[in-house]
Figure 1 (tube, rainbow, N blue to C red):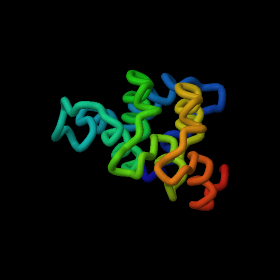
Figure 2 (cartoon, rainbow, N blue to C red):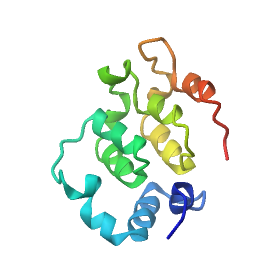
Figure 3 (cartoon, rainbow, N blue to C red):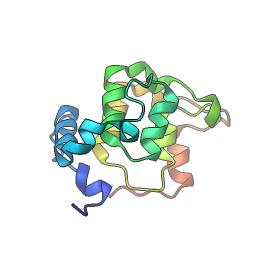
Length: 135
């Protein structure tokens, strides 16, 4: 199981977020049982910062579960991250993000795409700043 994060979570283009969740869960039943952070905080409240942690840890399964259950997280802005929303954070990642994750986030909350952060930047600006290319 030495797959990169992208390989583990890449699913056919026609797949739904539910398919991604089941695919990601099935790759590691032990990880699914342990939950985020190795099970140390099983009832952690879901906040934008919890979602940002999932993005930074490339825990796509957990991220999708959190935002699907609470889409309002998509437009919340983190005071710890210069008022960035989740798409700002995702767009600024220096790693490959599964396309289905980005599409799901945009579909859940299209308004997040045009929401400026503290500096007046929208998520697209952050993608350009990091030199991201679609794979």
